[in-house]
Image (cartoon, rainbow, N blue to C red; front, side, top):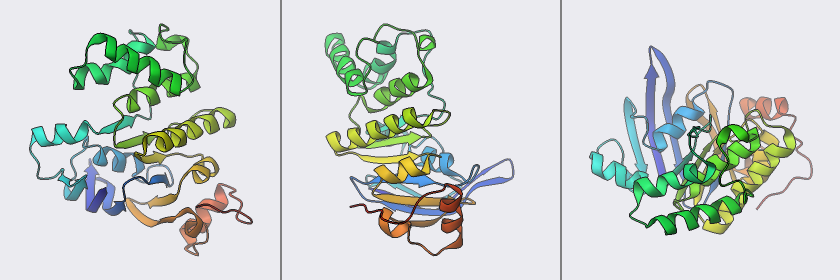
Length: 250
């Protein structure tokens, strides 16, 4: 479970988050949308414990990130997988070694066990046979799959994907989002996805949050969200050319 309470984060006089609050129940796939520079990525980094807010409270699985000690924070972070916006792959090591990295850093598993889990996870994202390639030999979509595999190799309870479809063509974007939905279905983890592909994101999410000027201004089930009369919601969905008629989600 995630609770953000009145979060403020500033960078050089700019307010990235300005009193943001958000509650996320376990097992939810929350799609996060909003205009560029509104604070979506900063919010994800706060939830992952990578950014310490200037004010407010951050609770992830009952751990208060604002008051916990370093050991407690690191322990909580072991249950969080993050797919970064820029992939953040290590270019000098193979795809397999990139995916193995979290297990080598966070667990005491033997080398053979780590390799077996990495191979299994790469198969889950459709990259069997790519284990020994270097990242610079991959397409953009393949790099995103490697980053996704690395983020979920530890089978985290919380998976955060920050713009996993940025710069990808529509078909590849849809494939990545479907994979994320499949991982959530298989592992029952909580998933937060930031994406500019609003149509694709809405199709896989059971809840949607709209971030605007450093705040979550609307968060609800996908069905209720698309019916909101709030002008920012209407404007954003209209800009995304999201159809309204005949849509239904559980």
